[in-house]
Length: 351
Image: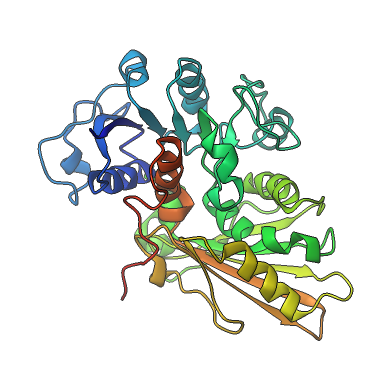
């Protein structure tokens, strides 16, 4: 019998990608497709790739609590309330928002508000226990996710940055990490904004949110926790590029004395040799965002600049796939005791 799941926030880009993936998933049935403002509207009226008579449901906590798992694809404010209520009632939750990605003190710093559920937020040292949320980057937190009730799906930028940098953390000099990342416009969500009009983004490339983008705190915290050492502050600048989906993160860092290009290659190969969704490319071969469209895959490559003593790490993903809905399904598979790859692929649509 298929697992009964719900998607809250199904009218957003992350939510509809979850619905697309769940429709093709052999072990789950989507019993609830909940949205706030769009409740009662036909799904296909917003998303013509999902034809049929289904309509968006109203959000009903009691109904959601009776399901086998709930995905939250809402902004962090409603996710704080819903995630807390459902997890405490024993319903597994995968939250795509930033509600539970940071310890309470980090959330307060980067989001400018006190965390209303500090005992559910991750511990500062990354340890997991009790009812605390697990950070859902399976390649590095699989065991923690497996024992959790509430999973915080990483942000799209942090996913790409961390996949590339965590295995190399022991080889890097603290305080030297710089991340230059670029994402398609779907990363900004479905809400209307003047800056996202076609006439504005077409042919344009712009940085935004620097130097205090909220994902900076998430990258800094989990790079140090998962990398096993404090790498200090990170410089992170995101950019908006004129394409619908796709994300590329290029990270630079100074290597510790004596670290060679072979050390870098070995660290990445050993970290991801058995990972179904991460492909380590040969040095000098760089990832393409288009090669990953529609997939849960990540391509990563690293080259060492002997002249400067720096490593350049590039990671690409679909920001709605491994950067959001795909990774959420990967985490859900773990929570439901399924094979992690069920309903997912690392192979993108190309060309």
